[in-house]
Amino acid sequence: MLKKLHLLTLVVLVTVSSVSAQKMIGNETDAQKDKRMEWWKNDRFGMFIHWGLYSGAARHEWVKHNEKIDNAGYQKYFDQFNPDLFQPQKWAAEAKAAGMKYAVLTTKHHEGFCLFDSKYTDYKAPNTKAKRDLVREYVNAFRAQGLKVGFYYSLLDWHHPDYTIDEIHPQSPADQSDASYAKLNKGRDMAKYRQYMRNQITELLTNYGKIDILWLDFSFPNKNGHGKGKDDWGSVELLKLIRKLQPGIIVDNRLNLEEYKDGADFETPEQVSTAELLKYRGKTWETCQTFSGSWGYYRDENTWKTHRQLLDLLITSTSNGGNLILNVGPTARGEFDYRANNALDSLAHWMHANSNSIYNCTYAPESYKVPEGTKLTYNKATGRLYVQLFTYPKGKLLLPGYNGKIKYAQFLNDHSELLYKTSGDDIEVTLPEKKPDYEIPVIELTLNN
Ligand code: GLC
Image (tube, rainbow, N blue to C red; front, side, top):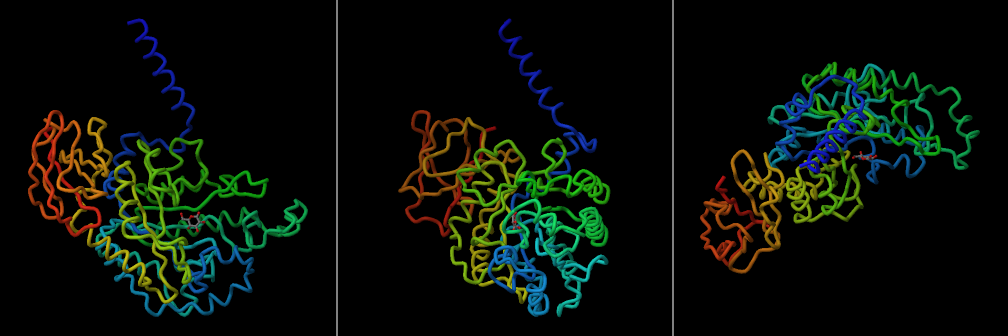
């Protein structure tokens, strides 16, 4: 008893101290936050869209950095930009068909070019051959499909004259000496750039109606003193402004506000393996992943993920309680490349039949052992457990220790009954010899409680 009490005191102390170690920027309660995040956690699957001038170079969205191009050298991509096939209604229809519930578009990437009509720059789509605000058309199209709308906005800006040269700027000095930085940064004023960002984010969050997600990218503090973090961005004030303009908005974790409990709404593990996702259980997160290696359209990049790898990402994210945002990099003409279309079509085929094992689902309680060759997802509200058949077993599937735990079994894709028998503590589900027409078929188990 005494021992138990001590343990309890310890737990309370640890909890209290870890909470008090985290400062707050606003005053939202945990319950209010849960409510605000509810749709996002249930929806599980979104579309990232990286589109900008780099789509024309077609060799990575970091091309300006990778090839150390200056503004004059990059100008040709602006002059050339002419997205004559841009029909965001098509993008939205494809996202919806693939089962994606929300989207996030790069309104400005590191190159500094704005797809929207900003009062604060001439470096924007309306001044290209596009002659119009492309963000507005995206917003209208996705909203019309009932999808939630998000904006990506790059904190970095490799075009703005006041943005100071840092370690990853295309014009970063070869010798990395403080003197070289000082020389290059003479006349540049981050305070002015901060104001520019605040102005643009204000435009984005006031001129387009309700915005569901803001994806700010990214911080790189402590890089030998030539990185950037919360003080450079004015992150605290920026986040306050964002929450004031759009109280319901969901914001990612790249503002470098780790010391604040409410400095971010979700974590963003980028391009991690499915094995790594296990360690995010219990947190609020979204893994961002590309179809190929690059975010922006990269014509000659050929390492495209297979349908199975994409499904694995989606299922494994859900089965560890997180979201997946899959990226498309449209071409400079404004369409999805055929490889992206094929990938989305295959996902649409699977999601049409199996999305109930993704939406509103999370990881299964530990009392359900994971049957061999499968992963589990679980819908608490409906009392359904989903067995994702990564390897299709011959004739039968053993559910270890499931005796007494289930009352019905069926394939999710066609709701066809799967007969089963008990054997000791276990259950043996009889499966047809022929695998259903899905890369990873799903068994839906109705649980006893
Ligand atoms: C990175 C990259 C970037 C991409 C982003 C998406 O931080 O800088 O190009 O937009 O991740 O997660």
